[in-house]
Length: 89
Image (cartoon, rainbow, N blue to C red):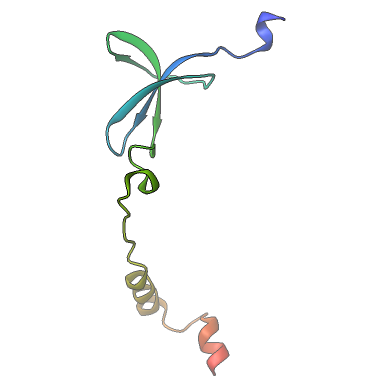
C-alpha cells in the first residue's frame, strides 16, 4: 500500500466539556490542539457529550420546560401565525 493513501491512525484524547471527563482512544480525526495527559502529549478533541454525560447512559434526564417556552412564545407573538387559532375559528 502507498503510505500517503491513508490518514494517520493515532491515539487521541477526547475531552467531554460538560463533565470534564477525558478518555484516550485511537482515531484519524484531525485536530489543531494538543494536551498533556498522564505525562504524554496527545492531540485533543473537545466534545459536548460522551457516555459520561449523556442522559441515556447516566440515567439522569434533564427536564425541559417546554410548557414555559410555549407560553413565552404565545405572550410574545399572541395568536399571529398560529395554525390552531385558524383551525378553531
